[in-house]
Image (tube, rainbow, N blue to C red; front, side, top):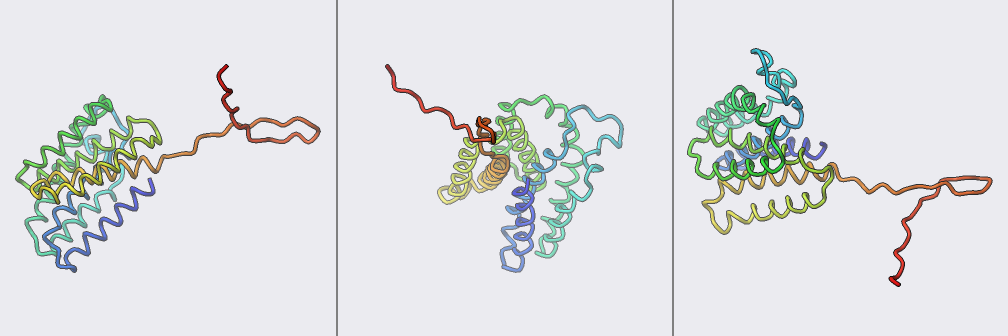
Length: 235
């Protein structure tokens, strides 16, 4: 997932640049996108589908890769640099709620989820963020949005170009949504982030179709690309 990992680095760089550019008020939207990406990466790395038993197994996703929590801490530090302590508190609250309660509790549900259910959950989570009033709750919902986005991709076919096209169209519509209706910004940001993650993940697995090979006769037998025969004219 080279493109997804690159997106994390670019996003953290943009968040760090916001206070220096005088755009500290845009920090919550950048954190929302960061939460979506964090949830996507966690579901991608954590392939356990069964119930966790015991205290240590409950946080096995944290023990698996403790460095994955660094973006949460970086977001908190950036919020303090931007002199927005309320955002720092909301980010810390969302990190604790998402990592220690919501995600471990949803493991069984995620293991039995079909692609259709994942899509429905994804749309519902994006819609609920439009009415959430507490920033910490909205960040946690954005984290679950990333998890549902990864489930949608994992349950689908590998390297599906149609999914990439639909995701890119959804990303473009989400970008123009706040222009037409500014109050829809709370929905547009997580929707654009989810579509971007789905497009990057699908593009990362696109492969060229295998071409059959055949052995050419003669003394020096060699492999030759076997092209499919042209369709004959109907009789």
